[in-house]
Image 1 (tube, rainbow, N blue to C red):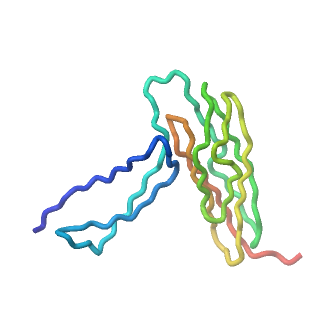
Image 2: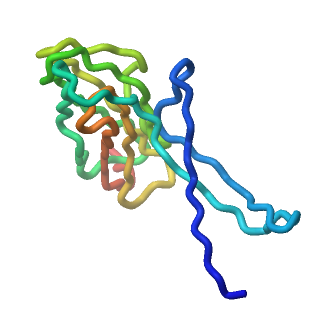
Image 3: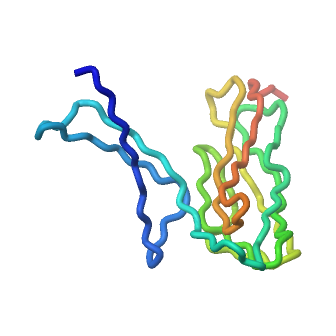
Length: 165
């Protein structure tokens, strides 16, 4: 009674069939043969297994990682361009792209960016009917950059009523 236990959740991912990006699970404990009514939510990010001492590494530089569209009409579709540059010495590989609801990131998983190369990526933020406040969009990008494999893009807009012209 009144004792506290510590549990550690570990994700074991297959190198033959890797899973990249956001990993979520719900775990129920069984205590003395009875399933607990409480559920534990776990979250992790699947990334590459990086080897120490590698001399050639990709290095992702993403600009901008935050973009404010300012005041926008409802409904509307907003677009901007994000630059992804590989400042490393090995190819940069896009492992996973997970956009938030209402956001599209035009970057295919598996895309490869050569060292010193820059690609322009279109991002679309949809401003739906019924939105009259600050709206946020964005997403997560997982790359094979050992220094920062998980990157977050954020986009914002202030939705206003459509004007009659």
